[in-house]
Length: 133
Image 1: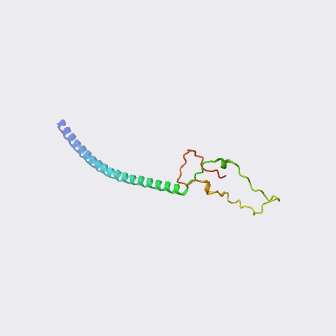
Image 2: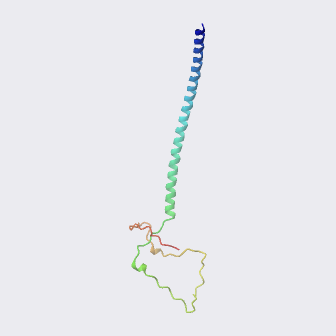
Image 3: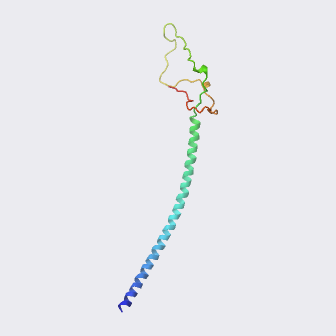
């Protein structure tokens, strides 16, 4: 009789275990489906954010290209290589002009020494920008 009682207890435990396992599987399956839906939503949002970032990067690149266009210098000529003669000073050694304001370090540049922005440099030289020191 002990064998019969043990087997019915085992069946009862197996039934309870099986029922608990089914509940766990059902619960985990629903959580898995919810996670899949959250991941799909997150992936769609991520793709949207990446597209926005790429669009903004392109806009920034275009803005910077328009704002900071670097003028290209003319190809050097033999005349440009010759040193220019300085104008002579009055005999007193002093200029008749008022002293310059040196608070601004910017130098006036003749725009005719630059090519239009639409032209491209064909010499491949990256040193086309004059040194404004």
